[in-house]
Length: 289
Figure 1 (cartoon, rainbow, N blue to C red):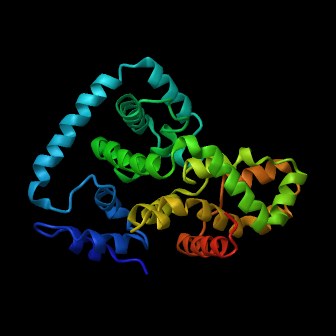
Figure 2 (cartoon, rainbow, N blue to C red; figure 1 turned 45 degrees about the vertical axis):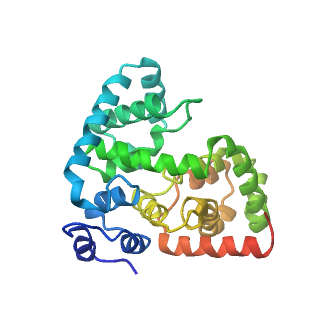
């Protein structure tokens, strides 16, 4: 059961220390929009539970960010890549990306790419930023460091170089668990790479409605273990398929199927996450991986 806004405020407004284990426990069931920014900062280790040095630490982050941003925003190659990615944003995020927020995304993405990446540039960095712009309204420095926190988790638990393996494993599970849906998609020549890569790579933030995507990420960031966080994501995708399989089987046009896969309906994400955990347990019992 989700906690109230007042419960979160009581927890976060302590004088010297934030009880992070309790905060994680509450956030696993969803975070109220009015306080999500503050909660995500703790979950992604942008803010420290010990609040005694809160002001000086925040100033240090502020100074570091603007120093990096000024240096990186001058690279035309990076900016071209970021702007190209943003053109791929889906409608629910385009409404968030007014000219001011688009500039924030461009600066934050350019800063991350220029200062944190030593290898090949990832294809979709900018597409994972709109949720943070939405949550950290008007706070560019918080947007950067929250995004950086996610990417640290992502690159550790889901290395980009292993994407091909993750896609192959997911497609195998999908075909075993949902053979009727797979047959329907194959009949209309809908290829897995037309939807699976985006589902897995961008954590469903392109496909889900905004509120659903943010609710899902609450649970990922709040998880006590990676198995219940980002590593649960493939099973969340399978649980999403559980909820739309009837619709897909009834469709007879390739374009309609792709539209359904790329623009998912609103769902009860608490239920989807519970389904995902059940699917994961079933996969283990049946030794499918």
